[in-house]
Image 1 (cartoon, helix red, strand yellow):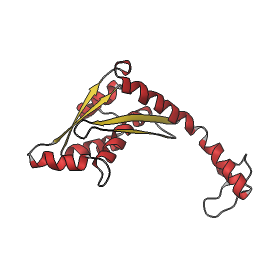
Image 2: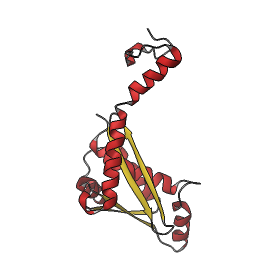
Image 3: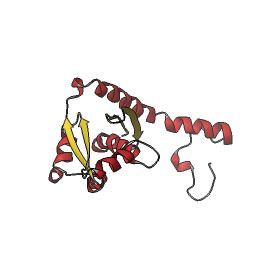
Image 4: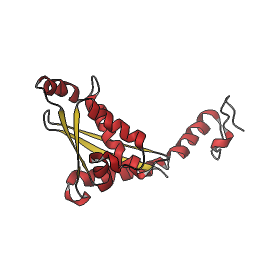
Amino acid sequence: MGGGWGGVLVDRYSNVRKLVYGAMNPCTVTLAELWPYLQALAWYTAKNAGPGRRRKKEVNALGRNMEIHIVTDNQAVATCGMFPESRQAHCEIWAAVDAYRQNGYNLTFHHVKREVVDLNFLVDAISRSARKALDDIPEDALTVLHDKYGIPKEATIYDFSPDRRSCN
């Protein structure tokens, strides 16, 4: 089954808000719950992207680590984020979170129920829309291939060869 995610990075230092969202198929609940934080952190800390890289240099010059608070409506994510020994799945994905800690980011996870924070309503609706949009992607792609190459609209993944272009 597919999963959608959404999140908002709020940088109080630069007054920047960045909406991140997406979907993948297949997906697990834990992956969908973790992905917005990884996506937001990747943007925020990337060279020539978000404001976090410059801010981290300023904070490090003061001899401190960068403080990042992650607010989630998922109790398990908050618990696993704060207590790594409680993790039972997706160790590879959690390793990406831990890599931020090893690179000078203090990550603090907070559990806040969905109905308490307005931004949670927004990202919940966006993540649901992203997940639903996944259902249309294969049909949309086959329509394009049909229009461009005459490939039958009812073709399946088994009709496509992995080593050459042909569709029967």
